[in-house]
Length: 202
Image (cartoon, rainbow, N blue to C red; front, side):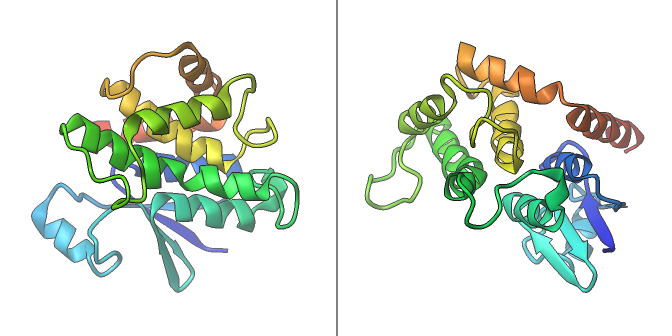
């Protein structure tokens, strides 16, 4: 299938790029400078939210990083990045696949801003519970689902890497070992190198 990833370096695009590399997919990168007002408005034809990444699949466009990872994991089953529908671990996989963007990010940014939403008013709970939940999911195993690397580790790992880099997550031996493990993967290294090259050329 024809895949084109709309790409701006040093953004969530790197997560989608990492997923493409893990899947072994053939793809093109389409440069988008969302930091430029004019370019960002032109890009609205692809994603009205003016956010990256976006993945063009033939005549369709997939936005939202976790959705892109979910699509690619199912589109490239031979890469083994998701339990099959009905297989053990599929439900847990879906839970963790979206935990980073749906729970960790909003809870963390709310915490950093010194805000606390009423517990029954938001879907992500609070930051301390998010960290405790993730810690319990990783404690005693290398990966989140069936102790096997999956797209869920890409979405969670990328979120953790971002928050750790900006010192929004406290150091923790379980989290540090997990990040070291997944960031040593060749596909991550390739995506990181491409992102650095794009950033240098910008």
